[in-house]
View (cartoon, rainbow, N blue to C red):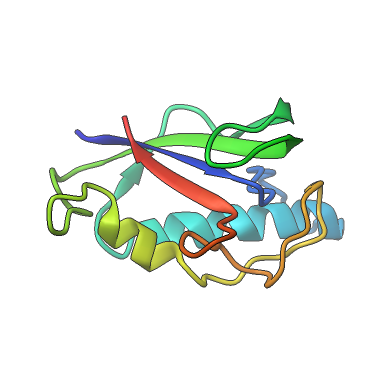
Length: 130
């Protein structure tokens, strides 16, 4: 099963709130995680062993400086499901770009517009095959 890594400046904490939850932070975090999983699931079933991990410090490339960021590793059931023209993540980058999110949670970076941005000069989300 191919494995991928998403690094994002958007809070994708899997908070798993109960139905009775009224805390908007937990609800927003889970909504962002759900949106991410659903966008990936457009092409394949998603599996993961660990929930997204938060880091507060030096940003990985392509960013510079320090900021909170989330890293999530997952697998899909089919080989080359996101491949186009030799790029193993091209279709996933396309699928995620512009998916709306709830901003203003635990992010320290400004998220404008409130969406996963995987393309352009100022991406807030990077996808890698691992």
